[in-house]
Amino acid sequence: MDKHSSYDSMMGAMVSEETRTASSTTMRGPAAATDASPASGTRAWTTRLIVLGIVLAALNLRPAITSLGALLEEVRDGLGMSGSVAGVLTSVPPLCFAVFGVMAPRLARRFGPGAVVCAGMVAITAGLLIRPYAGSTPAFLVASALALMGIAVSNVLMPVIVKRWFPDRVGTMTGLYSMALALGTSTAAAVTVPLTDALGGNWQSGLAVWAALAAAAVLPWIPFVRDRRAPSAEAPARERVPALRITRSRTAWALAVFFGLQATAAYITMGWMAQIFRDAGVPASTAGLLLAVTMVMGVPLAFVIPRVATRLPHQGPIALVLGVCGLAGYAGLYFAPAAGAWAWAVLLGISNCAFPLALTMVGMRARTGAGVAQLSAFAQSTGYLISIPGPLLVGVLYQHSGGWGLPIALMTALMIPQMAMGVLAGRNRTVEEEAAR
Image (cartoon, rainbow, N blue to C red; front, side):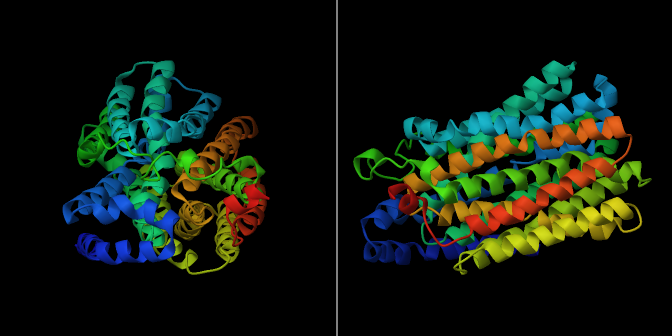
């Protein structure tokens, strides 16, 4: 297939560029050179393995969520959930990402980023295997939290690993990672319902099958478990640079709020969009495909947007374009959800590509690997905290209003500050500069 051939050629290109990366980092100064030293000193197979590990990890960062979204009605019926409790369930991912994501930099300093990501993939595998057979709503939530804990630490460490191993190709590698993430998201949304039907219509089997993909993602990270160097790939960062007070940076706060609002929109979409279409009269299988279309839009765009963003002095215009697409998609859901369903799915899929844009800006708004680690943890943990009420409010508004008018109005209103924060976060400056002032 074309996707596989392009992926193979990309990995080959990265390996061939190792020598050029090493020489260019020595020309750019000690900070750049130390960030790149592990990648420049490894053999070709090691670079290929880390690329494979990044791709497989990214494929597993959303199926735990979108597979549940596709079967939410069946899970609610099977466990006896109310609409409000289902809203809590859709709020669990950002809560776990906020709580566990902030631990990622400290764990990476102690055990090494490779070991933490490997453990994260193990946690995802265990959580996905356990939760369908938990037997009660509380146990289902606990098992989901285990999987989401693994996703949370991997979420934070992916930009750090990209900055560490590929400092001269942040846009390309962020694009590859984001593209794989979008592919995993859309695949889970598209095939969970038909896969469940093929397995006898048992929703437990339809959810548990995704543990196999997570188990495969453990393997490439095993060789890196004993690599306990700091994320910046050198001696402890505090010995080389002053402590970064990230909360003093306006850009860090703007990026955190932008991340939180785009996450709110994304988790509302993943958790509720299929249900919106089903309530409008769209068959369940078609609603799953519509959700898949929304997610699959991120496959090509998640690769293109980071590459474009790294070439622009200001990423704000990209945030504005994505926001306008979101506003148009919400308007369509309100006025003609079934009649224009495919168009709204496409527009909301474009809008959801604010996620790879946010990840790219994390890598661009800090100069060093240590700065990226702090900014990634701060922006993602704070952002996911901000996003927690959104899916819950949608569930409450839906249950008490008896329709989707108020929830869609909420989604529309949140898009305006998202666009504004994207403009502020896109300015050409670094958190180190702002914190120093």
